[in-house]
Image (cartoon, rainbow, N blue to C red; front, side, top):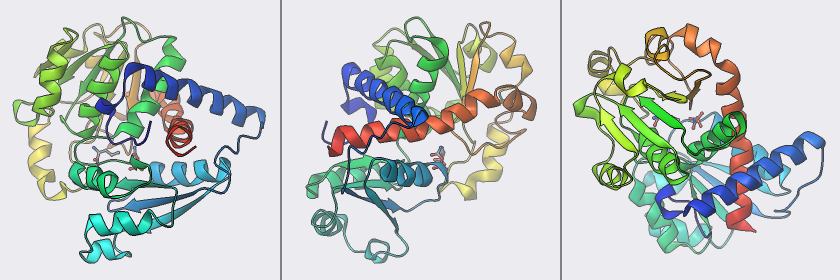
Length: 300
Ligand code: CP
Ligand code: NVA
């Protein structure tokens, strides 16, 4: 595996390989067993958007693997003043062993990989969030034991999270339902691919979509970069909330996941959030393990 640009680039076997390594690294960390597989390696972390989990888990993860991570806010590097991606890629490739980038356009991540000569990891774009979904899959397998026959229902905006969840969950053998308003459907190409699996539906009715779910997932109504649409989105997404009524139609022991940050009483009630806090924060912890696995796979 050379890069992690989007989950659709990976085979089922590659995804499972990352999850197996993530479990192993999680256990090694718990037991205090040294795992400095990336000793001496340097990761650049370009951020054009805010972050708590992605920044801290990559930085700590790189440290634990024996390497070092550099935080590069796009406001502070010349990229933010218009230096092209193709030049940034060629320069950074001469200093670093890998780059993690969080930005707006997926094409910027793809261009970084095209013009650079070092591994590139997508730390979120408007199109997808593959690192988050690898951690989500690790959490689901850890808590449910397997993927086969399990159903994930995503409630809310057909955004970067929805796009990556559709690809990741379907690839490992789960079924996926999306409940979203017509105006906010996931990416058309991803949906066309998903429909061919026969294990996918995208509907507007939240309760219908949640029936028989083993995992319910939600995300904010307005993502980073959509702040000006917040008021309109609050109207459009009213009713697209994970609450007791939705949870009532799910399978017994249904998990609730949220990539975080969460907006209580918007996409999820405080009650449901707190009842499933153990799952949600295990999911957040698993960002560390899953990303360490990704870094080892692409940088070793
Ligand atoms: N879930 C996630 O990516 O969180 P951050 O925005 O805090 O990195
Ligand atoms: N959809 C959210 C995810 C944050 C992790 C966003 O892009 O802001």
